[in-house]
Length: 254
Image (tube, rainbow, N blue to C red; front, top):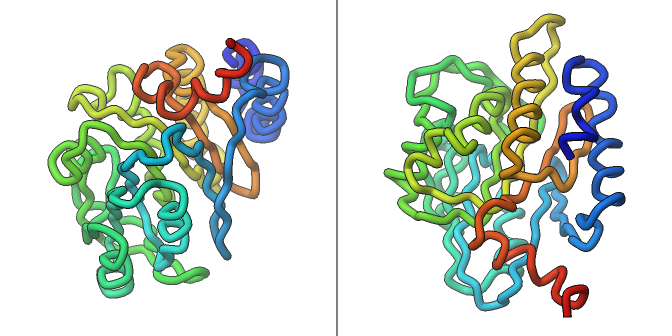
């Protein structure tokens, strides 16, 4: 993966245009083609995941940014065993509190890289957004102090712009790792900056470079739909590999 990305991650526009094709080529040219990624689509979102090798696994699924839609959680309930825990955070209390509480534990605030009060873009309904001051909890604080689980099987991040800083917190030297929290799978949407020279352009390149250098998370899919939907899996964790990866290779190795 690092070799595939190395010559494009120095140029933002080229990276944005070519990342999807590079990820597809990488998957087809090495052992990643064994892995069968599943997808869940709703009216406004598509998320990707690897089903557990053990059908009785009670997983932990965390969603940052609910957006008044829990059809993803309902479909994941059919994949993971009864007893799987769902946690969701979104600052729009009125539209999300009762909704998400029907499937899991709801937290009424935004989640970002650090705890603060921020001016953020909030998704009020499917096509309605507003900019408001919101209380933001750092991702490591959210996972370590509120979710309080050592392993997160699937983390879904729909940050409406705040996602650029969050992924770095999941790196080997990031705050989530320092908390002792292992995240096996990540779905994240990167919203494309509209202004040329936006600092997020360089952050996007820095994130890809970090992923390539560390090798902890492997990008299994990347879809450019105006913004980027990226799905990553933790290949560094023995636990994550045993739950979600090794069974795809069992026939090959036997």
